[in-house]
Image (cartoon, rainbow, N blue to C red; front, side, top):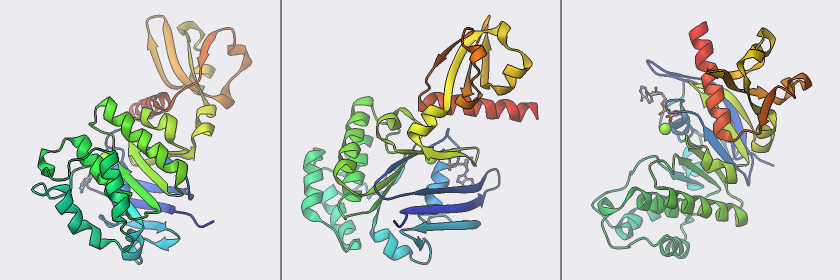
Length: 291
Ligand code: ADP
Ligand code: MG
């Protein structure tokens, strides 16, 4: 089947930052979480995908088509949720939507109204009086109302309170249950992805760390904790993001590096995505200091 998104060796340099050889792809019907700490390059990647920034080199295809050459037709089928309010503040959503809807050939007003009801958004109050959560919900309602095949969201949950966040995630979860749309969802709050993501793409300091199925990633690592006195050179070498405290240590270990001789000596736990991000970033920082 045709891929929804395909990125090959994408590069973009700024004065103090470079996105280097980013490659990943997304198939129809899946949710991909796009993770990395603040400043990793997530928004830059998304802006490059949307051609809001010009890439230096590499290839980006959406629905199998070059994202610059076919930009206009591709964007008809993309629902884009920005990381900040990009609507006219002095309008109500009703007036704002009157401006936006004509841009989409497949605009579905009934569906739009359905989401406005479901999200309990006031139709006639000015957008500038909206909370961040309300703006996000409006943005999502628009993104979902023109039969988009691909929804791209840049940190849709950042700055939302936990209740609105979980509500938003439930909505997304529902959407993928009965839709064939694919979603690319960037966040530095990995908890959001534990439940809903099928794939995870992780970047750090502009570099690819991995892009893999979530379940496979969770299987690939273990968190280990134990007494510092077992840390021989050979063991240290294998540990990822080692942190020592008092007499103990904690670190991550690739499942393939697990060694039965450790069995009696360490406590072993399955990681969540947050653990994987934290230990990997710590390892990367330690290597940067060492080298
Ligand atoms: P993330 O979204 O993962 O937090 P960003 O992609 O926003 O990260 O930013 C990555 C890096 O690129 C940051 O160091 C940021 O300062 C830099 N950057 C982003 N946009 C620009 C720009 N237009 N000009 C120069 N530097 C930029
Ligand atoms: Mg960002």
